[in-house]
Amino acid sequence: MKSKDEHARHDARKALSKEELKHIADIARLELSEEELNAFSSQLEAVLEYFSTIQKYDTGEGSGKSEKSFTHLLKGEEPFREDTPSPSDIAELIVQNFSKRSGRFAKVVRGLKK
Amino acid sequence: MTAEKAIDAEKLNLKTKVQKYLARIEQKNEELNALLDVFGDEAIEQAEVIEAKIAEGKAGKLAGYVLTIKNNIAIKGKPLTSASNMLRNYIAPYSATVVERLLAEDAIIIGTANMDEFAAGSESSTSAFGVVSNAINPEYVAGGSSGGSAVSVRAEFADASIASDTGGSIRCPAAFNNVVGFKPSYGSVSRYGLADMAMSLDQIGPIARTVKETRELYKVMRGIDHRDSTTTHFAPNDDIEEPRAAVVKEIVEASSDEVKEAFLSTLKRLPFKTEFISLPFAKDIVATYYLNMFAEFSSAMQKYDGVRYGAVDPTLLEGETFNEVAKKVRGALFGSEVKRRILLGTYITMKEFKDAWYLKALEARQHFIDEMDKLFQMYNTLLMPTMPTLPWKKGEKTEPLQIYMADASTALANLTALPAGTVPAGKPIRGFKIGVQVIGPYARDMHVLSVMEQIESVDKAKTI
Image (tube, rainbow over all chains, first blue to last red; front, top):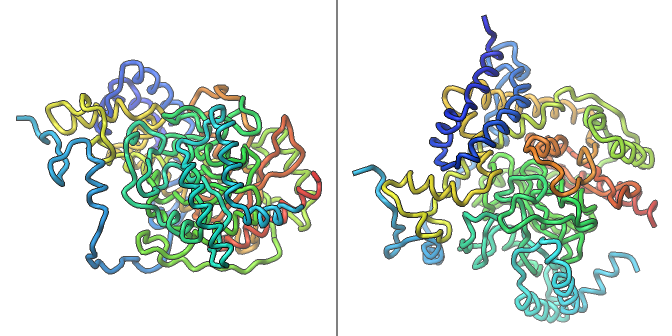
């Protein structure tokens, strides 16, 4: 039976077929050319192959190198601030950066197909 | 005249100093490509205002400083491009907190600095506005991602530059251009107004020609800002102690022979003892850093879809659905390295693969934090070469992985939130000194700067 690590490595390679890469690009909302797909699939495979050393860190309970997984970089109380409304003079500057606008709104195409 | 006295003398004639920098920019920027925008008239105007303030004795702490700002840090009313076609037409609607603080103390901003696109790179070769050249030898890479910042300091376009560091982006180019660079403790400097790359790793810091100037800038930049929640509980410990210094064996051994030799001979000349220690996890720094960063980077890039951040080519905005348009915009306007990182970040956080990749990277990160905590119970200073090699020639490294390996020593401080800086040291090799990196305990930024200053003075004593 394959170990969890072997599975992970196997999955890494499998995911980098051109078809899989297209699927990832779709989720990431990136249109890629045929040329990019070809170049990226070998480059990304090399990166993940090298980075697979990470898989010795055990996220299961007990035998891991660390007692817990990373959640917060800074300890301390929750740093929420008071949410008090105040006037802002930058709304127009923000709106000026929109590609297409209608008054103070950004104009975009519909979310779903008709 | 000492450098210190020279600065004081220049303060008295700030306008001349600004004009001198503008002349240098005019002469050298085309070749080096370090600056994207130059604010010549405004800088001269400001110099006149501040000269008058100096004469009246009313000038701020940074009167006399002329700065460049990395172009991922907002200056109200100026282009904020992050060196990407995606933000080519974006104008910052407000200033970053650091910019406000520097201006309030009478610093002058002379221009914005070129960089790797969205800070994704270690050469400053991925900018949509062209490659930055090394200021010592333009055939070599500038280092990155803050290449324009470090080059602008070394080439004397300004006194100093304000940049960001996510895995070494301040320290790498500072080392490659033989200037001083400092990444403060995470949480000590507000990132409000910084175009984020990876939020749990990003930090803003200074690059300058001396440690003294680096410290003066840092002191103005740091402090609580309610617009960046990471700063609200930062409690600096400004005590300076005798260095109890450890040297990371694995990082020294993984360096090139010439870097190793220059580093070891620098160690011998330090006024304090150093002890070699082993950090077995050091070989996993690159993998852990990149996997953590990819995940956060792909998320940070999601907001760029052609709608809100500067007008994009209207033909790209035609399509049937929002996601179809976003795909087209992002495909056309992001560069290759940004795309690679988005793809990898998306992949390692997908439901099917996150256990095997992202969660492991988080666990490794916590392991590093735990180990550094233990280490700093015995020592207060960690030393290592900033970069594993000297700068390489432009175009020499073609595979992304080769370039990622350059972050093997710097990224440790970002993963663990620690303060870290680099100072040039040793005999120049092909014109380049090495950078020595100092890492200290959390919130002990002033201690790190003091150790950097000791290394700097040993190095100066040798070369003069």
